[in-house]
View: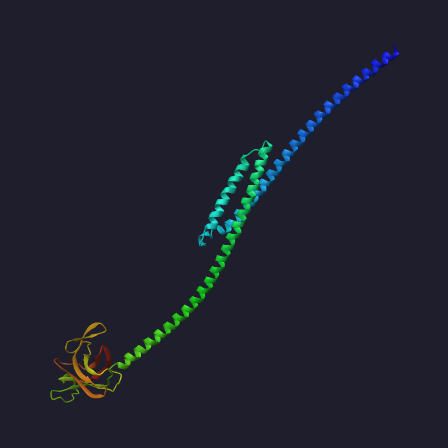
Length: 312
């Protein structure tokens, strides 16, 4: 009897223990499942944070590269080949497109997280490409800047040489002009010993100018080997005290103008001295005492201008 009761008790205890053990196992399985779910969620959040951090870092790198490139972009027009600029622009557009896709894409699954991670790797490659293009671009700009500096220095040197040559040419030109003027003056026909006399009706000197019938101008042409030989026409202008021209023997050209003269005479000049050259004007009115001016011209030169006082 007692033995039968003991068995029942043992069986009951074992049943209870089995139930307790089964409950414990079920609870344990549930706890493990919850723990695994929490770990997975934590891992996903961690990966999402890592992707966000990587995305922010890439955005900062892109901003830094763009800022650095902007310092040189205004010099793009100076480059002979703008291929680098075109490549940079294309790579920059692709990076910005990927960045926008990352911002718009919300990762809710493992596959989506892996897709975002893959885009970040692609972005890292594109940004590395941008950095390489920027380095090459800066190298070209620096090279161009050095070349321009060298050209400026060379141009400055050439300018200095040209200015020096221009000064020398101007000096030579001035010397040539001076020589030309000296040669021209040397060729000029000269006159010396100019005199003015009043003559009476018999060709004798007349002291009273009011009784003069002729005015005689006498002068000498000295020797001048520089003066071209040949016929020389000498024009004389006599101006009375009133300032009016005496007589009218036609006109001659002087400094681009037509000038009236009192008398003219042509002589044959051979380079030797000709003394006692005379020119006359027949008085056709009563002359007044005062200052009379004698001017002689030849070969478009004014040879002399002298003033004489004739008295009553």
